[in-house]
Length: 129
Image 1 (tube, rainbow, N blue to C red):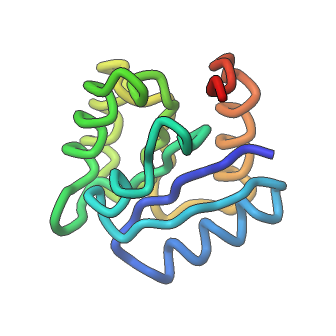
Image 2 (image 1 turned 30 degrees about the horizontal axis):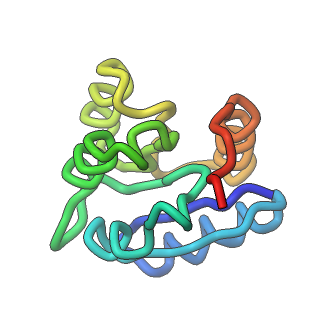
């Protein structure tokens, strides 16, 4: 079971993504914006994948991605962007900052398949206790 951190300011979207991913067998943690997401991450509790929207208050998805990529503990966490801004999301994917992009509105099966593909490619060792 992978731990997925879902970051989106829309609570209905977070609930939908949570439901889809839990049905697919993942554990889900939620945050309403990037700052709250960073508060949930520690060296002892790293998510296996971060799923983030781009446009959010307080700390948006681009800023969250930049902070994750700059941290020694978080730089290799796979990131999937789920956004209605397809052009911006594709730019992030092309730059290599994110592993995948899912455009809103999305088909539940496509989102689950994307996350399953990302988690199956993951080769990060578990944290040392």
